[in-house]
Image (cartoon, rainbow, N blue to C red; front, side, top):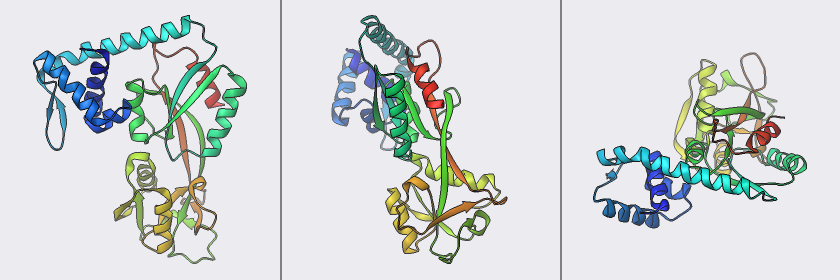
Length: 288
């Protein structure tokens, strides 16, 4: 038994997926599956009950999981203490960033961090908003940035910026200067999968305004494809302004009070005694 096997087991328990666990642990799925298989062989018990559709902890797995979590926490605490005690010139923090985040905002943020905390190095990991919480839990990242809400309520959070949410619709006259949300209820909307948070934000926008969302049954896999389908007339779509090309049919989107609709983004992190030294200073920079 080794620490890596224990970390792999905790990641599978958190994500209920060998595929997602391998992504969070930055190893191939066969390598992770083989390591857990060897661990189960050594323990003489199955940690997980596997089916074609799900992965769940066995009774034995549930019994030993808490001890495994404590072991991973002890390892993390020791590593953090050693890094801080060695007085290294540079401290590294890992940010999980949704692909929906504006690249101009990221450039400005990294510039502020370099100016105010020159001995801090930030490493970005692009990941879906749906994966940010589990990545923080497994210590793969220190902080996440994504569309609001980005993580569970037990995390600390801070609003970082917002940008206009534009509508793309071939069904409206090209002379229209803007679209009203209540005028789009009869339109069929094309969406991406909900992992990045855009589909959830679209659904929440309609729900908050007491409107029904008519969803196209297919799903796009990228923002450019979402824009392309809207231009082909397959359906209408919503996208943040920074994700839209210059030649798009996109127009400003207004709510019932004629206020331009926007999408907000937040930073999230785990609070408590285990918060890394220096992270609170980074959070202050994010919030300003």
